[in-house]
Amino acid sequence: MAAKIIDGKQIAAEIRAELKNEVTTLKAKGITPGLGVILVGADPASMSYVTAKERACDEAGIYSDDNRLPAETTEEELLALVDKMNNDPKINGILVQLPLPKHIDEQKVLLAIDPDKDVDGFHPTNVGKMVVGDKAFLPCTPHGIVQLLMRTGVKLEGAEVVIVGRSNIVGKPLANMLIQKSETGNATVTICHTRTKDIAAHTRRADIVIAAAGFPNTVTADMVKDGVVVIDVGVNRVEDATKKKGYRLVGDADFEAIKEKASYITPVPGGVGPMTITMLMYNTVESAKMAGK
Ligand code: L34
Image (tube, rainbow, N blue to C red; front, side, top):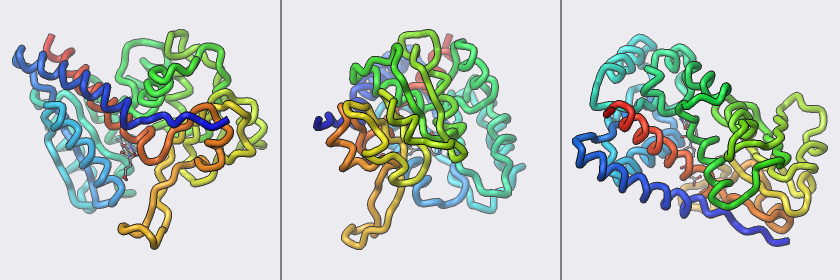
């Protein structure tokens, strides 16, 4: 079977157009959604993600407050900026791009964000609400993955989903979303990680495999069944002298081999990445709507 490629850029563009319309309506009521953006340090990948987020906001009419801080920024300085944004009515959502430099306690910073402005959905209050099925800001990457599956028409109810990777940003929240008793859930979910005895034994029986481990070739063609749906969350830079930048992007799955076997697969780039950005915009617009009531 030759897989259909799930076009994350296209699906993201559709949702962004919907959001742009909503922003126009909100602005007519005097509400401009605003996102406070904080990046500490100059990691090239983080810089490019943050720039893409701000550009996407701008295109949809969402105001963004750009804050690029030096790597030496102290935890106190960062907490002070978060506090300022918590109290700024122009800001409906706060994004502190991760990872943070090692001298800063990430959990402490995430805890300082007002849960009502936590558009990344990382605050324990939102994580807890999500787990019990209450309305909450959903973390952007897993929310984007669920949207990709829904809008592609992949059946989640009763599906065997195997997630490779147990991060707080992707694996853990995605598993929770997919087991909810709801239209966007009702799946049977397994999480594999570095201490799993035989990852392939799990992925081989999966209807849907989510590759979110952070390493190229974590999921290979021999590890999946015919007709599988593969969602590739990885964004890895591998050296490539033939490219202008000196590197190319690959996911966590062996795309070329798996596409001969799968029914659907997401590419890297152009799969999950654009959806992550889009769901951040979605949450910011939702937050502005709630604040405007
Ligand atoms: N706070 N930190 C916070 N929130 C997040 O949601 C993130 N994440 C992850 C890293 N840290 C975070 C992101 O924004 C990963 N991530 C992210 C966002 C966008 C893209 C990739 C990762 C993306 O746009 N990827 C493009 C290729 C980008 C390129 O050319 O380098 C793609 O098409 O996959």
